[in-house]
Image (cartoon, rainbow, N blue to C red; front, side):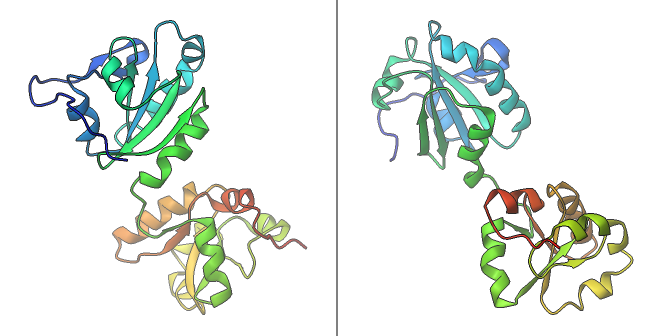
Amino acid sequence: MTILGGFGGAGGGGEAAKGKGGIPYVTERDFEREVLRSEVPVMLQFTADWCQPCKAIAPEVEAFAREMEGKVKVVKVDIDKSPVIAQQLRIQSVPTFMVVAEGRIQDAVVGAIRKKKMQELVEPFLPRAAGALKAAELAQLLPTGQVVPVDTRDAAAFGRAHLPHAVSLPLEEIEGRLAELHMLQGQPVLYCRSGDKTKDLAERLAEQGLPVAFLEGGLLAWESEGLPVERP
C-alpha cells in the first residue's frame, strides 16, 4: 500500500515537535519529510489526548524508542490534530501502530501492544549484522551438511543441551583455535545462550578479516521456534 495524498513536507524545516516522554509528533505539514522520506524504518503510533490505553502503554513506547534509537524512528500522530492523516490511512481506533519503510506501510496493528510486539513488527526491516543467521535459516541448512553449529558456552552447558550436530568450542578458546574452527566439515555457525556474545565475537573476527556466521538470538531463539535440541 503506497501512501498517497497531499501531505506537506516541502516547506518548513526542523524536527517534528516533541511530545510527552520525548516521542515527537508529526502532522500533515511534516509527515512526508519525517515519515515517507525517512532513511530508517518508522514506527507510527496513532493516539489522542483522551485515549487511556495510549497513556497506559506510553512507558513501553518510550522504552522501545530508546532501545531502537538510530535504527527506528518512533513518532506519534494525534488523530484529532491531524485528521487528514487519520482519514487517509483509515484509522478507526487508537492506539493503532504502523510500520512505514521505504515510503510504504509495511505492517499495522490495532490496539495496545507491548515492546516485544513492537520489536517484532520492525525486525524484518532492520539491517542485519554480517554473518547473522536466523534459527529457521540455520534449521534449513543443517540437513544439507553445509554448516556446523559451534556451541560457545561452557562444556557443562553444552552437555545439558545443544543444537543437533553441534560441536563444543568455548568462547574464550575460539580465537586461539581458529584453525580448528575452519577445519570443520561445514561452515561454522557460532551460537551462545542469547546470541549477544557470539555476535560480538563475529564482529571482532570480521575486523581481523576472518568472517564467521552466528545464530541470531542464540539457543533461546532456536528453542523459541520449537526446533529440536539434543539432550543426554
